[in-house]
Amino acid sequence: MRQKIAIIGAGIAGLSAASVLSKTCDVTIYDKSRGVGGRMSTRYAGEYEFDHGAQYFTVQDAGFRAVIDAAIEQGAVASWVGRALYLKSGQMIEDTGRDRFVGTPRMNSLPKFLARGQTVKLGQRISRLKRQRDNWQIELENGDVDSGFQAIICAIPPVQAQAILPVEFTELTAVKRAKMQACFALMIGLEKEYDFGWDSLRLNHLPIAWMALNTQKPGRKLEQTCLVVHADALWSEQNQNANLEWVQEQLLAIASEICATDLKTAQHTALHRWLYASVQVHPDQNYLLDPRLKIAVCGDWCAGGRVEEAWKSGNAAALQILN
Ligand code: FAD
Image (tube, rainbow, N blue to C red; front, top):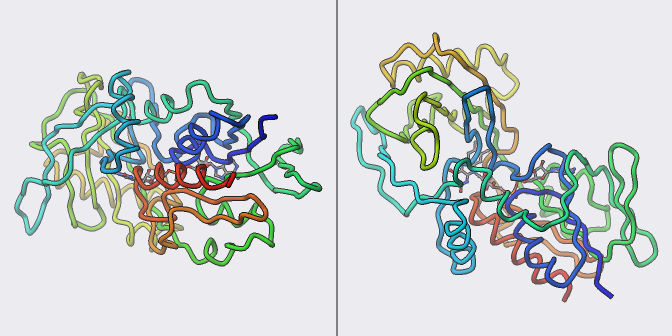
């Protein structure tokens, strides 16, 4: 009989685990959000669209490369050959590095591609995992209970994992030690197309760390300008409880200066606070597994904090959990 597995979290790590396990097991993925993708997400505001989390990803691992090649073939991913610049001491320098990839036509197209054919229950926040003889029972925040799982994969950030893991999970200390940092994302929608001389700009110009023209990524509509501004991680952490209007004003003022354009008059402006954006302290293991309980914890935060690491973490956890 096929084993029944629950995966909590439909981000890239959870979906990666699901694609391995669903070949031989009955897999159900749960996510508290309305869509799949987690931090590989897209925010819609009328005609405007913003990848307000992950901006692009790189590919080194052969297994991840095979997945990305398949996604490219299906039109869900494309290489982003934009004008990538780095602002250093007032100079614009070409920001060289590995090839960059993005979901097309939006960042969440890759998670949607991976979720095809999977059983995903959205809008379902898990509040507790409970042992029931040889199986696991999942308690949902709305009071529902799903039972009979032989193994559980928690593909969620460490603070959220701590809240649901049983106290006897042997790797609980490593989960508690991991630390993530916040990030403010400002989304600016301008009615016409603007050219600031770059498509993405990396900078150390506090409070801003990154700016990108979402509309210049492949497969996006070009008639308007959708600008994404990410605040510096430390600045975001220090100001995570600050007044949101104040945060927005600070980011808008510096972004306007850098773009030499008054962005305060933009047709659309919205601020999002990511509480768990990047990884500060990680266990430096691909995943954390308690083989006796048959519970694994995975996600980008286990290793390095990027999309590729999330995929590798979910993949590795799935390959080990049934051994
Ligand atoms: P997540 O994507 O966080 O998925 C976890 C999922 O679990 C979420 O969907 C959440 O809703 C769900 N969940 C949590 N708790 C529960 C619960 N109790 N019950 C049910 N569901 C739950 N990476 C790059 O490679 N390049 C970049 O340029 C880049 N830029 C970034 C910029 C920002 C602002 C942010 C926020 C991230 C960025 N990243 C970038 C990191 C990248 O987004 C992550 O590494 C990757 O998406 C993490 O995937 P994951 O599956 O580990 O976690």
